[in-house]
Length: 610
Image: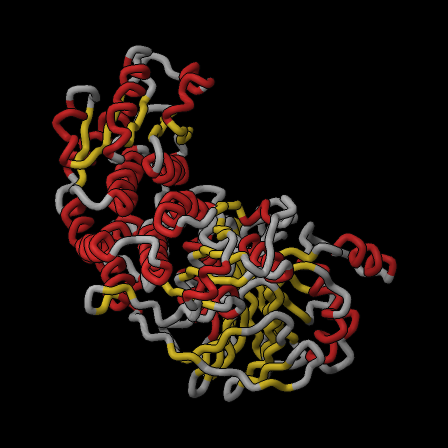
């Protein structure tokens, strides 16, 4: 949510800032702005509501703003409507200090009243302008000193980029509960909310911790703790290619990332399979520690939560340990029963999701051991966990997740198999068979993706429906949650997923002539029961798209209007295959409805405010 990029060096800043913002567009935004400092021209600010191209045109692709230091921002409105005035950067009344900000300043109203009592006039509705005005109020010739005083006054979550016209040789960055990284170059330094914004210029980065402040110049960077004492930072090397964050000839990032799933699965699974066994070098839990566990909590949001719902079925079957799946945004408020015998499995693509991070910290406070599944190396959730398993999916740019979901599921399989083997809850023969089936999973996903025409055809038939229901039982229901979310996220069609056995408890009242129902019928033991549910909705006029394995394909086709088959696999791994046609169906439906697939309305890739 929102994007920050900053540059100080020997080149013109504005074009570099615009390019960085383009690489952050996937995060979601409704306005954008630049502040560039030139010793002769002073602080130049340009802001515009709408897409980044509006700002680029306004500034002549950045050529109209001269200077070798500046900040850029893409804003997703929280405080104040999306318009030019409320866009970032926000500038102090004197015109001396400019600030860009991700997050929320919780006590901004009280600070605003204080500043207004001192005669300071505000022009925007934002909480961010309070930071700019407060910095100017405290500024006495030393920007770092003013930053220190402001940090003692503001409350909330924030990533800040700050420039001061009186100090044209340094750029300041501050982080608390909102991600911020520094990029290191020979004659420049950068700051950004995501590594994608700097990767074209440098692969050497460091990740700021909560409470840290950084001062950047063209030739150096110094990081300080919350007491403004210097600290040494470890510099990390980013090893993925720039092309991984580009479309590579595909029309949309989402479709590219759907097609990348076989590779992402191989990258996640294969290095952890050795001589027919699952090996997780990243996890230090011993058999004795596993035997002491009384429960697992899976904590996540959105699609990662849906991974958790599938994980409950998988992990309980494999481990015979109770698994509770909790929305991260609810975890702190449900008085969870957590002890030192609890393992909290925290799932997040970005590793920066604010609700998930807060829930994780609460679980830690209550005594749980923390194991995280994340995609972004060096992210806050990864750094604060006892154990972390990276999904190795590569950068995911589209707002609607696809390969991140699939690789998170794969890690759940690996984790479940490894723990089950240690605990002895799965026999050797069954274990060996499941490991062999897991190795085949990427190839089976590739097989589904090799023939998308039927799914595209079905999308052309059903794209104009106003309401869609996904039904399934057992693990089919779990994956139906994700299929439904994909459709509503990018096509704006109302969609819900229900446990099929609940139809007669109210849901069936919503079924009428022409209602589209997607029936997931891959869990073989419950196929006949699901077919009975299909007959129930058909009797009330529903159009039904069914998804099942090849073993049941012919039988399914007798009962539904449109049938999709997936390869057979071990029942535990069905979600990884079943989700792929649903991703494709959502994509093609959105395409036919003319939606902005990679940047759906009102959504952001990384949710970093509550």
